[in-house]
Image (cartoon, rainbow, N blue to C red; front, side, top):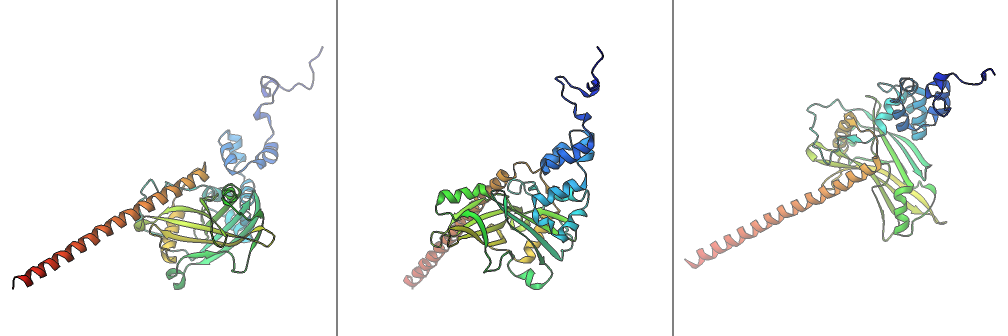
Length: 343
C-alpha cells in the first residue's frame, strides 16, 4: 500500500503528531497569534526564536497594544508621538510607560545628576481609568511649564471641572468592605509625556495604594501614585487622588481626578520644583514591569514608614531643643536670683 499523501514531512512533525512551531507560517503567527498577546507577553515571546523576534518588532503590533492598553493614546497628537518615539516607536513607548522606574528610591540612594537638560515647555498627561476592566474615563491634558505662574504655584493637575462627574457602573461604597473591593476593581494609568524629548513614564501604581472613606461626607478617596527621588528633598510622593461620591440612584460617581507632588514633610511642591524631579525621573531607567502592583504598594508602604520615622526624629529633636531652652531659662533665672540675693 502506498503511503498517504496527507502525511506531513518528517521534519515538521514532533512526537505525538504535533506540528513543530517552525512549520507555522509567519503570516499565521503574526495575524492569529501575536495579535492576541499583551505587551509583556509579546516582549517575552520575542526572546523565544529569531522568527518571533523579527515578527514581534512590527510597529503595528505595538501600536495596537498601546492603544488597547491606554485608550488615551488613540488621540491624534499622541498617535503621532507614539510612532516617532526614539528606538522602535510604539515598542519604545510601551517600554517606557508600562513598568515602574528603577532603582527603587526607597531602598537605593540615587545620585543627583549634576547637570539637567533644559526644562521642557510642555508636559502631556494621558490618563485612563477602568472599573473591572471596563473603561470609565479617558483624557489627554496638556500643561504649559514656562510661565511664572506655573513655576511658583503649587503643582497640581486637575482633570475635571468642579461641576463635572463621571458615572460608573459601580454602587457607591457604604462600608469598609465595599471600599476594600475598590483595591482590586479600580485601575488607573497616568502617563506623563515630554513631547519635546520624546520621553514618557507612568506615574500611577496601576491599582490603589489606599482607599479611605470620609466619615462625614461619605466620599471615598482612592489614592494611586509613585515614589520618586527628590534630590535634596529626599523622597517625594506623586499622589493621584480619585474622589468618588454617590448619585441619587446609589451609583458611584467620580467627582475629582488630580495629581500633586509632596515631600516627606507633607509640603506640596511648586511647579518649578516638581518639574525638575519629574524630568529626572523621565530620564531615568525603567524596570521590567513584573509585579508592578505589589511593587508599587510596597514602595508606598516603605515611604509611609520612612515618613513616620522622619516625623519622629524631628519631634525628638524639637523635644531636645525645648528641654535645652527650659534648662537655659531656669539657669538664667537662678543666676539672676542669686545675683539679687547677694547684693
